[in-house]
Length: 444
Image (tube, rainbow, N blue to C red; front, top):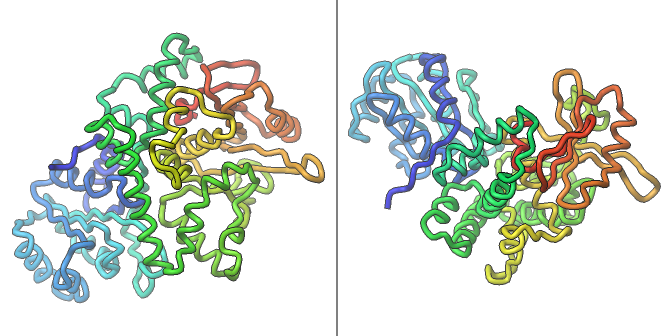
């Protein structure tokens, strides 16, 4: 059965690149595996060009890969590709797609010369694209533009379900600072569905076909195992998998940082750092870094040794959080869908907020400072807007208590624009505080 095609926002980015670049650069679509990179890139190639060749380097023969070892005769290269793939390339009207290009570093390096040749356009896709083994001994082409692709965001998820109207309506409520009132309950329920299913195209397709959470959960488990297989290829000891699996438990403990030595205690610091870098480069997770001096240039005071980690897809996060339980025991599906999520599972909302902020183009930062000898204040997320900061506190319950946010805004009063509480109720403004339902996070 053919894979279902889902409308994705990155298509317009590819179209913009094609029209503006006019062959002067290649474009690399980077992201985790199974988020739909290959599907959307092939649809783009098919729709926007007279012909295309797609080379899947996960499957390509050595004969194909070796073509990129010698670029002295590009005429021979192009003739060989047209013969092997039974496709005629047309000058300035065809595109060559390098799918999963990390499996053939020489092809990626060749982009410099292929772009200079000018006959065709080039689109690359890749995962784990920047780790050492995929970049050593090659020159990264400066002619390569890079765009990040993520799992489906909430709007793309609604599109997949045939709903084109909800997000424009949400934007209207937001722009006019109007509570949703009667519409809130329905949209909140639909958003909880997104949190459960997630934005991995296979999981979404499974939900549409089966309308059964146990089937969807099985799909998500296969994706998680695929990621872990990839990690084992890089580090056969399984340490990266341990670090990945620990994310839900670390968030549930409400600690102020992720401490890798808790899980790989007998690993040297340099090796720990290398493994964490691989985990971050896998794009399966989002890192939120501590800013030691919260100000507009948060990157200048980013603490590289103090961070939190979130799973890049909250649907996968839900499955990971209850990995050891069978589906029938997985209370989170029933509780979350029915809006009866216990307080101790509020970290699911923190993960989805992190996902939505990052997918909308924001770098993730947070800040902590001492409350007393044993406790800290903490701001969950910080956004830079103009010359000011917007602190965010995420609440799944007890939203009337926000001591950390109050203390932060007092301490840094001259730096604050608007303060946000992201929670599970309707849109509400009071003074300089905006209470935002979680599904509006992407609009901040």
